[in-house]
Amino acid sequence: MAKRKISKPLSITTEAIAEALKTTDGGVYLAAERLRCNPGTIYDRIKADPTLAELKNNLRGKLVDIAETSLKRGVLAGEGWAVCFTLKTIGKDRGYVERSEITGKDGGPVQTEEKVLSDPERLERLAALYDRVRTRTARRPQRRGAAKKPNPP
Image 1 (cartoon, rainbow, N blue to C red):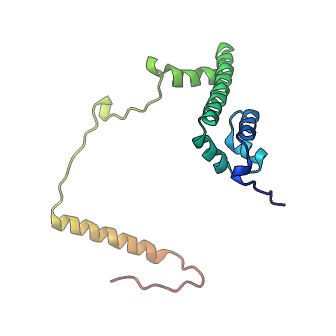
Image 2: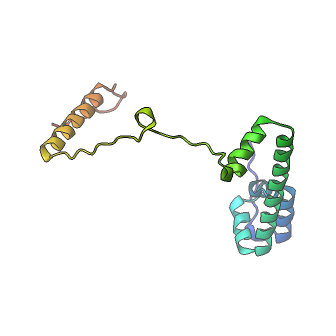
Image 3: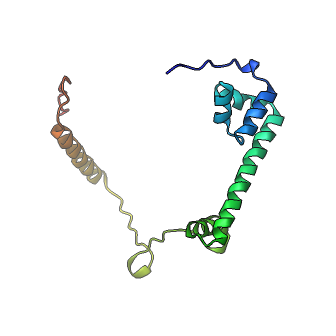
């Protein structure tokens, strides 16, 4: 596959970037592909030029408006996916949200217990954990060609 020649950033005019952004509905990567430059070049120019930034913002806003119009058509047609999506996003303030409730026994509060371990108990648990890790590590198959490492005492 032949590599494309990447243009130098300064050789691309603001007008060319604007036209490429219009053609791609504000899609920077697609515009960069059309101009045969790196997307970072276009992002840098957008940051430096408020006119390009406004153009990109307006084009993306227009695209979102078109998507919302399609969503509205889906809702009006009774499409379940459209109704569900609309209620989960726009209808959140009316209580249409997905959430999980975690409760204790019979819907009551979750009971928690805080246990403070003494130093000997902590050491005992750490030693048991260390032994489990060491046992699992010893059971793993050795990779071919890898030097076997001795287990620490």
